[in-house]
Picture 1 (cartoon, rainbow, N blue to C red):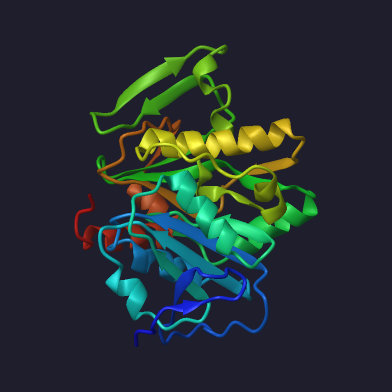
Picture 2 (picture 1 turned 135 degrees about the horizontal axis):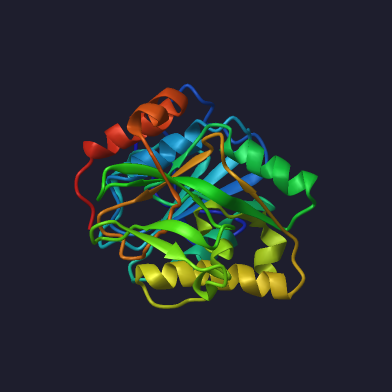
Length: 294
């Protein structure tokens, strides 16, 4: 079922496609959401069903999902949904990731904003755990300081602790994998823990005080926009909470189009991941059947 564009009263003049799919999870929006999940996307049609599943399976109620898409054509998948919790906005002109994030947050009704980047896996308890950390630690923003990764280039799982700046790291990029040993005073990683916005959860008040920068469109500037947003917030006195994911809350996936490098310290065997994090291997298997992304 495809709904015609409607205009939401909290964003005058902004056409929004409200969508819905029959699912075991309730698609009704009882009142104002407590969390607004935002996804900026471009030419990632094959990934959007995976993001929707992550959203729809969250065990935290009263959430909305806002997708800002500057692809050449609107998403057939998004237009075919019928979920009152989903807001889809296709924009005709190219925008930077920072600009798309800003538009999505501006459309958000909740006071808590969570990033769900396209191409990642988020466990059903992800939002509940992140929001609990945000509240318990009285933080303005919370993120993962260590997380699981999967490279579609190498076919390899790994784990990366952003707070560990020195010692053995594996260099992941579009090129063959290499092992590097960084010195204790390795300055290139000094602020590395503030980037990787795929796990940002923050208050809308924090964003209003300093939105994302609108830069160029490449992968490097996507990460720069994330880290610049957080660094600016910290300079204003924002309270950052971070913690290591050692229970499988999220899987950060490096797709074949990724140009930015990653530096995990631990390579994980498939058998270990399958035994302890079966949802990760199921997600990766589902990605193998997806069409190649640009």
